[in-house]
Amino acid sequence: MTSLVELLGGVDVGARWPEPARGEPHRVVLVGRTSARGLRSVSQALGTLHDGKAPRGLELLAVVLVADAPGRLPLGLLRRIRVLRSVARVHRVPWIPAWRTGGRPSSVPRQLAAVARLVGSEPYGEGAAP
Image (cartoon, rainbow, N blue to C red):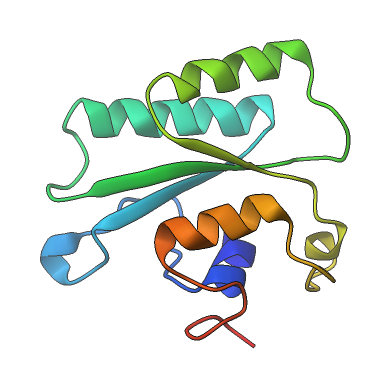
């Protein structure tokens, strides 16, 4: 998700795996929305990684789930997140209204600060877009 790259730095390779053999990053943060489709996509990507069908040499640091809307998640989606947590480190990021319009949040939610520490970054710090 480009908003996270702008906040934390890094590289957004889109909906594909990076290729460490081509000099792309080997440390991966898998990002998805908390919608049913987003959680299904994250689950499929984790399956691909677990089955050895992703490029060799990748290191999954965490799964980051970004809220798809303000408010609480339905129970069915929370259950899916519990399943994801059983196979990977999962960080949830709350709804950030400023991202919807392409802006920056006025303050960085603590959940994002935890992700920044994980990847060795500072929110909007060195290496992140101004």
